[in-house]
Amino acid sequence: MIHFLLNEKEISTSLPPGMPLLDFIRYHVNLKGTKIGCREGDCGACTVLTGSIYNGKLQYRTVTCCLMALGNAEGKHIVTIEGVNGKDLNPVQQAICDESATQCGFCTPGIVMSLTGFCLSGYHNAAVHNTSLFFNPVAAIDGNICRCTGYKSIERAAARVSSLMHEKDGEDTMTYLTGDGVLPTYFTHIEERLKKLTAAVTTPASAKPGSQFLAGGTDLYVQQPDTLVHADLNLMFDRADCKGVLREGNRCFIGASATVSDLIESPIFQEHFPRINQFAKLVSSTQIRNMATISGNFINASPIGDFTIFFLALQARLLLTNGEARREIALHDLYRGYKLLNKEQDEYVEKIWFNLPGKNTLFNFEKVSKRTHLDIASVNTAMSVTLDKNIVIASALSAGGVGPTPLLLAKTSRVMTGKLLTEELVQQVVEKAQTETSPISDARGTARYKRLLLGQLIKAHFITLFPSLNMEKRLSSNSQAHPGPDA
Image (tube, rainbow, N blue to C red; front, side, top):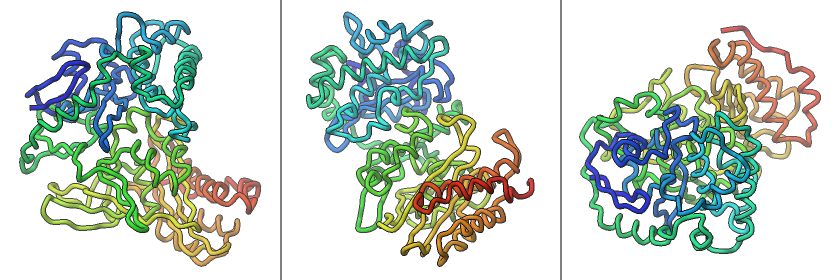
């Protein structure tokens, strides 16, 4: 049985855990305000809120429920548009109405839920989170589209919601939201109800041998939605032993089911990767970042997996287990060929770890795609460089979209080691990288274009990380050099 709260009601169901939550909401409890759009997590029409107890406190996030397994609702509070409705329009709904931020209305419920998620996040309070670049009301609806209405009216409505929240900085978020009608008053009892619910739920039986591992599901439900409904699933998303971002000495350990949002919000990543917000903003949407797991990005084995490329440059290592035996491998050793993994069927990633960068280590991530946001990369790359004065003493360069697997460019990285940091060295790095890559022409660009992109992005690493060297003009003047042969 699967137990959770849906709006005000407690749910117990024996339906297949692989059923998309969207189908349960619409067809089994007949809540039709949550819409079916793309079924790929792109449009946001099916956005709902998921509330769960994390570190003893209730935390809400938005998700696209077309990509969420019903089994992953276990122990959570699921909130649909019906669950935030009152006798009259609430302030979020009123802002959309006043600014004429809707036309046909099909996608509006999802937008309302995303803006409500922003209100619940607490990120509007600068005293709590100094991440205004990333967490703002417009960013909160980055995964919602409207097919009919110009976005300026939606942005105006979002600004009104933000203004409403800033007026209450310093107040307890839930107390204010329920007191001012943004949320119904039943929300004040949800934390206590969830704690009782999770305490009463027994530990589920072990998954059958050969069952399919499922974490966030953001890619699997796009690729094989019908198969997952009836599959024997080993649900990994909420496993306590696969959660968290922790520091032990100079090492950072990440639970395999930690999400992209967990990284963004981690004080460890905020400290050691101060541009993590900007990097992550290039990756998917808020709803997907709330669901997509880091290990899922690795195991997907896409040659352009953004966080795979990110962690390759950190020379991350994986702890693999089948529940009994454990082994450790380098992330770059996970890939044997296109979609071929150095992993047994019954093994899963338990943890990821890497050495945190020291004060003399700099890190950067670059990505180019047809759209700046909400798109897969044509080419992406990351670089970690450790300096002693202007001498490179250690480096790691990764690249995606230029080979059949995500690549750690070991030979190119070695070219930098022991060298004085100059524009001549940058050109050597660009040229060496061309010998370690083998892009092909496809929908994301020609092989020649991808080679040129890789060279430009490598230069961007150096220009971004070492502005005092004033290399930008000199490097850009040679931007067309050495694009390499077509594959």
